[in-house]
Amino acid sequence: MANSYTERMDRTLTRSRQLQHRAEKLLPGGVDSPVRAFRAVGGDPPFLERAEGAFLYDADGNRYLDLFNSWGPMILGHAFPPVVEAIEGAARNSPSFGASTAAESDLAELVMRCFPSIDRLRFTSSGTEACMSAIRLARGVTARDLVIKFEGCYHGHSDPMLVKAGSGVATLGIPGSAGIPADTAKHTLALPFNDPGALRSAFAAYPDSVAAVIVEPVVGNAGTIPPAEGYLEALREITHRHGTLLILDEVMTGFRLSLGGAQQLYDITPDLTTLGKILGGGLPCGAFGGRADIMARLAPLGPVYQAGTLSGNPLAMAAGIATLTHLIVHADVIYPKLEQTTAAIADGISQLAHEAGVPLTTNRVGSMFTPFFTAHAVTDFATASTSDAATFGRFHRTMMDHGVWLPPSQFEAAFVSTSIGPPEVEHILTAAREALATVAA
Ligand code: KE4
Image (cartoon, rainbow, N blue to C red):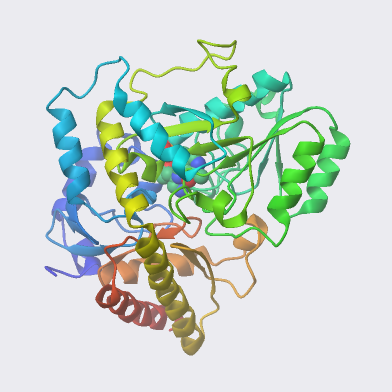
């Protein structure tokens, strides 16, 4: 590695720092998405030039082992040849038409093979659009306004969803966002996750007023938080009883936790599902879908309007088809390997923290995990918030120093790709041993 990350940051005007200074004159905070600014962990974010397999390469010639994988999409590793070739081929036919193509149906069929609960779907260009559209559809179908979400869950940055949200909102410690009218926020009820009592109280208070409950079935945006035993079943039962639509936001968990996401893992059938990230193989792509009778209420068939210039874009479709095809064909090998590799990493970090006397709780589901710097069990956003974010920052910087790039926030999930094997696991655990010794000192 050319120089350690910390040394590099201390040297004057490294190439990344030069690029950061330039970017800050053009983009707010120098970024196009707040979590990339490293505000929660300190240090300037390295500027990347390329990536391949499990590794990222920055503008100063440093190499990092990638444990955030573009926030989830790069499950097959970076520059996966079948995906790159598919994008190149589609690009030669022109990147966009704004008209229908067979590729949209090809990808939709692959999604429906993985998600039996989806009879019809529509593509968008982001997970935010997918969630925003699903919420509008649920309100249109039920003629109700109220939506329930959960503290620490993040469903993109549409106004109704930025209430006690996770991810960048939690990272920056802001309650929600400025610019959202009280008249909008009042229709969103944020409850504690994994609390069936709070759910029952909300429905008792608003028995026939809730259009939808939207939930990350495995929370990733407060850090990784699994559903408690029976919790998703309770969600399904109470929403069914009250004529409320259950929306599982599987933007992060879809094709990650299994081919059929969390709903396959926990055997829950939602009314609507939102997807993104892996779906587009690294290109801008989201989708929402579910019961045919609900989706039939969307324009041009029904009264709920939803649209997008680049929805179903040929390049995103090509990347998604190549990605899902590979995942489907090799699922029997891929998912057990991801499970085994991620368990080795998460359990290894837990063991090293125990040996170093550092309070740490590691939550993991499949190939997503989060080391929380707290002695508490982390079962919701309140317990996740007992984590020592400053210690996480020191841990993160030292891991960077040793060439391992974790998501730059205590309130995010780390993701493992199929490019990570035993040598990379050893690299990660060697770095973690050093980083834990640093925070223990
Ligand atoms: P996008 O609009 O960022 O494609 O998707 C929004 C979204 C919706 N639902 C879930 C469960 C999500 O995790 C996300 C986006 N996740 C964050 C990271 N946790 C995106 C990273 C960022 O905001 O830069």
